[in-house]
Image (tube, rainbow, N blue to C red; front, top):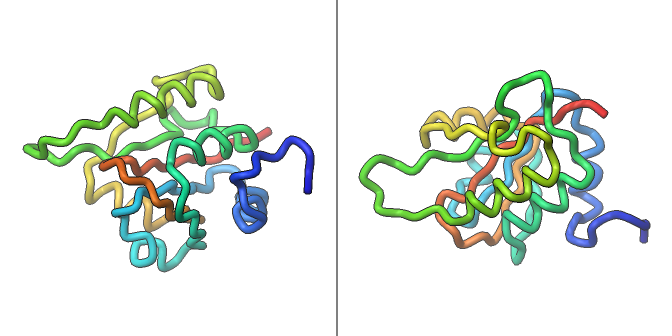
Length: 144
């Protein structure tokens, strides 16, 4: 046991966050995301039973967002014509506001297939049991 480490972060996830360098990306993926196929060249960490927002909150306690890029956070854009609401995005905005002075300005949305391409370049993919649609998020690591 360690003091000050959120209990939701497994040893494998902590090790991965520590291994990542400046500019590396991590995907926190919802339950529908093809984590194994998109993450075939990345570390895939299973966090079934946990949601994206609670993992985002825990990760950002330890993980600095990149200040050398305009948007170190990317969300998967809703496909045109898809009648899906994304209330989880507001939760993400609040979490990012608490952890990065840029707040929502640090966030961009990326078209779905481009998001998959960018996710395929990530250092790691965290596969969650999140049930919200379009809850996928990419974080780019900064420096301390």
